[in-house]
Image (cartoon, helix red, strand yellow):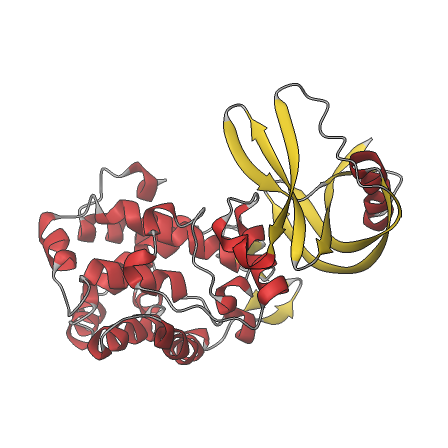
Length: 347
């Protein structure tokens, strides 16, 4: 009987790795060979069995290099070496699936469509971890961030970091970050016209909206470095905004932003959590909002949009505490941004 656990096998040869090029229902992508864990075996046992069944070889486990949740599964990734037999791809028995094996060069990992999407980033770090990439901001496709997320080692570090609190239900920091970027991308298309015009204004090389999306991608970058347990399985990330601004400053050296643009992104990352404290309650404190608008007038709409997306994209817990505040926040953001008819925010 299969469990909700899966294993995958990484084989290396001459600075290349073995991937299966899969075609399924007209879609083409790459995966690592592997399969489900049976109820009577460990992940390590499953690796040995799957290598024999799928690849026709006996393997020895070198190390487990990754573990994370993928939809409803817990997935374990093992680097292995062949110790017996001759490699022969058996493939999937499902006639809707066609697999061909391919030895892919380590330095081509980022060019491949690998499933699950975050595995591409993990493999890049595992195989080429010392390499740092420089980017043009125009190269980052925020509308397809899930499948084309740029390789930023600090971001990849958050894939297996899980938060659990009143606001996060055992949620991967990386997954939350990707969700936030996706939500903001949609919100920008539906906000009030005056906000659209504001976000379209170029700071120097790039418009404010593009800088906001980059800020969203980096806003929780420091959670791996600040996360601590608070008891009963809960966590918190104290001061992650300030620490995140420091890490962000280093990351921004790799992008082609002007000095003023880097400053704006840093300010958004450093202050993105303040809007939550301003809206902490069930009734609007006009004085607090006015003070907030005055103090952060240069990035007010960015902080409101990021706060709205943060609330919308979070995998909230079912705890009763915080529900009224959540509804209050959603109401404020909907009205302020002109998104009252946007079901994504209201949900």
